[in-house]
Image (tube, rainbow, N blue to C red; front, side, top):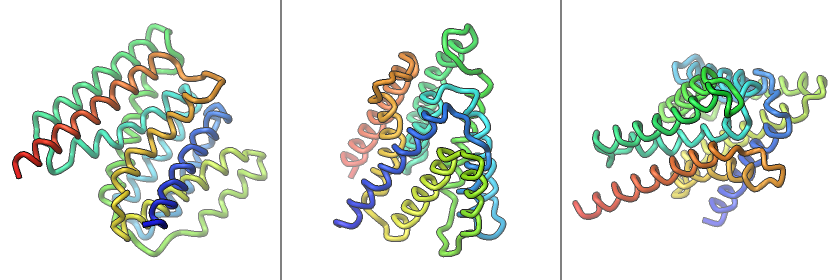
Length: 244
């Protein structure tokens, strides 16, 4: 249990470092930096591996066009999809969660269209699609002891090009993937909590920074979505306990 707890906090710290690195680089992250983790974890040619590679590369492509806080906030889709497609979630709750999420994101998109928020609406949509693809790859992935360690050598060109933050982003994502895979294999009780904590801690670290780069509407939308997901999960869990 002690090892699982330490692993939990280290993985959370890696997510915070990754978010801070994206912020410091102002989103100027080459696609290669996001491709490296996918190439590392892919063993053999699988549909889930292709989904992961495309999803990460697509997300990496949009980073330079979007505010960092908005890009990081999109990872709230992970716990949302986890709750929406859990065994205890019914169709009504699923429709409600997705409708609320799309309603909130429509406010972000509208703000970008009228120029009240930096970034482009099309890239916001692409980020939603990319994170959903990464989630789909994650839930359909079968753990394996085989990894493409050769992919880590691709970090060297980033270092040579003086893209230290891009290299750090690659390595932290690999570290997160390695830790999550280990938690799945050991059937850790903290796995579900980790899926909630990673996107929350990453975004919260940006909010806590004194630079204040988190736009008010992005923070508000993120808080409302997080609250809606948590309430939905809580109600579904209570209903399940009452049913038992």
